[in-house]
Length: 469
Image 1: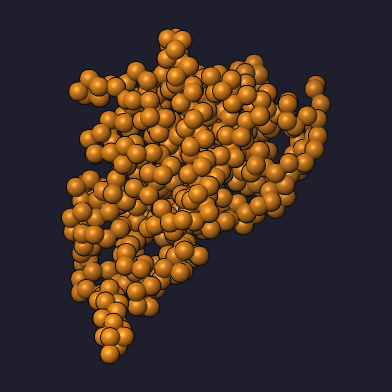
Image 2: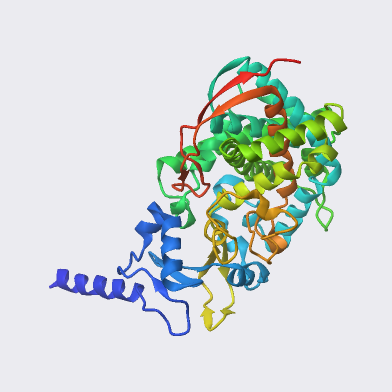
């Protein structure tokens, strides 16, 4: 009798957890009681969103083991997402799952007013003066890396190399030469950041602290990175010597009440800043190479830009003003980001009910946009699945519809590192194309098993050093 009673209670609980779609809310996807479409989301999140959009339109809700996640697809729907206030749509509440990576009390794990002050500190470190100085640093580190690691000829995995190179150049820009001395010759920072990245997957959206091997590796990697960065901060304070880099900006920044960031928060912001830039730049750099070499028209155009701008106009120097003039290389990078945005979902938590068309999205839902789906809509981009950098040229400007191009987010929460990331990629490829002839195979398939989506391994290429003329 007791077993029957327990069974009835459990059945009633399960039934109460799975609620039917409420009239006036977006259509619900996921009909299996309790589970909904969680399995599909965990194994093929982007495919699930694409199929749901085709079946239900530009607003729909995924039922995911008790969570309700409403997607808005297309510029009109996405404008609701990006224009919502923090009181309506909270990024802080949606992104708490990154706390194991960034650390406690940093950005999304801090009160709203503190979060915005911390983001202001970061933006202050990425001003124009820092960007101009970064070009020389990235050029120097790229040339040194290629000379020491590549030599005259050989075969490498392009994604692995771009991981190593982008984290090397970004960390040097952020922390100066201190990072080189702290790491020594045997740098494993790229490997540690890869383990951090692997710890952010669809499951981490909802259960970031499950006892999973990937989460254990994430936490161990975070502790090692934090120790490296903390040692740099302590050494700099000991020497009492000011530097001109982003770390110094954070070390001297003050909140409105006059208090300063403690070292633990500085470490967390540095981890988060480098994480946000490294995975985006390394993945996009890799895709850029594949698409450029598989489309000779654009590859040749970039080579002509290098000759006319870097070589002829600036006497062989790769500089900030020259890179800004390299329009075709920039449109290639932006088109790569349209086809393969590293972050396939952006999210907020609904704090107050919001309206879209005839739908009301209730408080408590997660609301999301998908750059990977939204930027491949035929209604927005002509031949949306084709690689066409010219769509960004002034005579076409297909990205000018508000909230149609969302590779870097949008609104007040747009990515503060957009200019640095594109500048970094353009600098690396400007160096690489001048020094080496590359044999790059066909474009690989994307890997959507992680929230940070890159090309499927392996990404093998062959290289030969160009002869000096």
